[in-house]
Length: 516
Ligand code: GLU
Image (tube, rainbow, N blue to C red; front, side, top):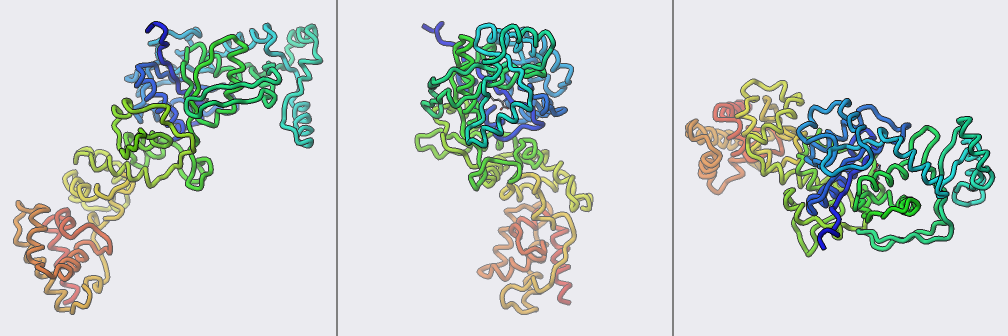
């Protein structure tokens, strides 16, 4: 029986737009998880047949973003270890693909390098009477469309060339190298039905489907033809892609049937939406994975966030933080939601915060350092405020509230620079001037009594709380102000600990001086 079970083979098939869209990452991730869970193959295929949309460096960007997020495909030209020294030369090597791909070879497959292949299949459909040449000029097509729109009909090719151009004329025109496209002859009055793994039964009436162009006059196939030919040749078993491709699926099924090929299963995953339920767009925020990495979101947190846009393990689970291993174990297409998934940046911040808290001091420092180095307050700080040891202390305090590394230090710049503030800010409630000074002196004496060796958070907190007794505000408010000059800040214990004994006492003395 086991020989009948087909090996699972899925693919991520992006068109290189210049960057990896968050939605693209989710599609890649769902494919990856599905393949890993089923011990199948996850292939990468670059769908670059739209020459008008060619973007220099787009493929490299895509591959970089995918590898940054840890999604390695196990079929393609590159081994994971080669990704970092990717050259366009190596992309060209994938030309060697003959069409039928043996499992175990490495991609990505690049469609623009397989043009001959699509031409051959398009011509085969013409020979079988399933497709036909169209010589209509763009101007004629435009006029036809305008007429149809005026008559409130959906734009459809009127089959002029199918009905009016004889086989002899076709041969003649082809010999003369006339500009020609190949169109699919979509059968009329048929219902195309399929079982979507996410959305259930779906049907389309073929009367609503235009005679698709399969092969363009520029020698390139259209998305529909290349996509179907490749999915067939690459023996893809499940096509897992965004819901925006759902209207293309009946066209693809018609193509599979025209070729006499078995169609794969389809799974259309829900749209990503902005908070106002419009389609996720650049206008309302960043959509490129790279943008989030640049802002200091951790790759594991991004993956964790993205996987939950349209999926959760179900069965009343409230789990929100998943390791990759857990995801591979728990991921199921049947648990993917039908409804659109709202991209909630606050959720990403929260998840990233959870991952930040789990980092070791050294990891925190390594992640934060490049971001510190971009900050003006850091550039201006004294050398002793830039050491790894000092920054690790700052981060120990900040990590509890930090959403992303780009924000590092912003809220607590007093750790890096001299402070200035209005002396009235040192007053706790109705304290008199004398009481303020006495309180600051008490803090000074208390902290002075702690030796440099004992300068720990626990020790500082313990001694200050004893000194404060039941009048905490009277002691701690002026102290916190003296140390930070800021209305909002971490506790005075944490601030004193980070600043160090000498600096903390110097700041308290400065505060006392303001009243002299
Ligand atoms: N090239 C399409 C895209 O850019 C892929 C659609 C599919 O997966 O079939 O998303």
